[in-house]
Amino acid sequence: MSQSPNIIPIPVSCRLTGGAPFPLTAKTVVTAGDPALRSTAAQLARILVVTVADRAPAGGNAIVLSLDPGLTEKLGTEGYTLTATAGGVVIRGGGAAGVFYGMQSLRQLLPPDIERFGWKAGGGGLTVAAVEIEDRPRFGWRGSLLDVSRHFSPVAEIKKYLDTLALHKLNVFHWHLVDDQGWRIEIKKYPKLTSVGAWRTASPDIYAEKISDGVPHGGFYTQDDVREIVAYAAERFITVMPEIEVPGHSSAALNAYPQFGNTDAPGYAPLVQPRWTIFPETYAPKPETLQFLDDIFTEVLALFPSTFIHVGGDEAMKEQWEASPTARAFMKANGLKDGHELQSWFIRRTENFLAQRGRRLIGWDEIQEGGLAPGAAMMAWRDVKWAIEAARLGHDVVMAPTSHTYLDYAEGNAEEEAVAVGVQTTLEKVYAFDPIPAELEPAHHARVLGAQGQLWRERMPSLSVVERRAYPRLSALAEVVWSPVERKNYADFRARLTWLLARFDRLGVNYRKPHD
Image (cartoon, rainbow, N blue to C red; front, side, top):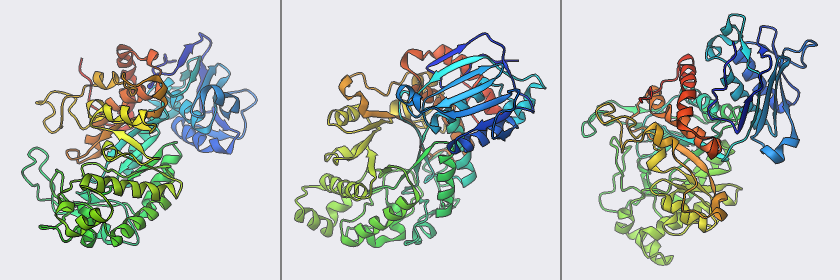
């Protein structure tokens, strides 16, 4: 039995042709002539429980994956076409990523039970509806932030999360690896970052933050773990972008190496923080600290091929700088009138370090307060006005506003979701988001790279809770960043969502059932 197209995100064009469907059987093969497509072919074959072959059998019965450079001009490297007829399924992409996204659409053309049983899901009668799809993404940046500092997730959980991002054609995994509550990435030159900085004595109680749970928490990723995750993501055409905070949110790092902080500021006593709030620790503007940061970023760049490196830059408190004779002397010697300008100095120096190595800095919108570094990009979280200003000045921006993309915020009412934070952010509200601010002139629209959903984990101790906060709101955001505005329709999305949630059930992905 064939299914009507219930694809999320909805394609640019999807037409049921009315022809005979394609039968999926044990004899079906997946072919991929280009080496760049072999991983995608293998992934599809595993899902469908069929084999990969060098060529289609004489009688057809093949799913053919191919690159078509001629599509690039029209659909870009992430665009694809999918044609299903009685004789077979053909997925063509302008690039390998496009073929992979076509494969994700093919999955959703089939019943959810394929996720458990492959071709056997149909009891011998499984078919792909005769269809023609032409598709490409609206934005190049389609992402999700996952915070592992507040609560750690092991490698297997990260891989599961990446699998779900891939199903939605999301392509940026923003990995929030360090913060005041834990340093999660091995840096070989500074082993105490993980032997000390990855472990805190306790966390706030999930239901009452003023009460400590008294339970030690920690964990970190070895460099081999990072390589494994980066490679796993790359097979799914997801870029892993690390976030290494500069100059604030540095308590855990400075607990491990206190000499790199403002040691002469009164009350200086950094901890791997057991509470959720903003802390005063910042890196000190002195040569040994700058070398420390350079060494860290050198190891990070060797692990992550991402063009963009996120440096945080948010919520850097200025009080220790203002109280430190060393920091005050540095500001005076360098013509910096206050801590805000010192923060900007740190960001500009880091931007220069990255640029010299062929990378680009991106940070939260606070990095704009002292003037954006020339090649820096900015992630707008507090207010879209920062994105508008940056785009008008010629900077690339990624939209991540609290109003629509903070998925740690409650979806239901306060009684139902007592452990969520922030204002209510409903599924419909997320779906209504447009990453292009209405006030931004068309000449600057290309500066908006895309958007992403944020999952800050102060109150998300497990992946199951993360998934329930993420889905289906992240599914809605996926359609926001992929599909043309004219194709969006909330009622239609809700109808298609029923099939996606059934697929989540088969995949073991937790979610919050939407309420009417």
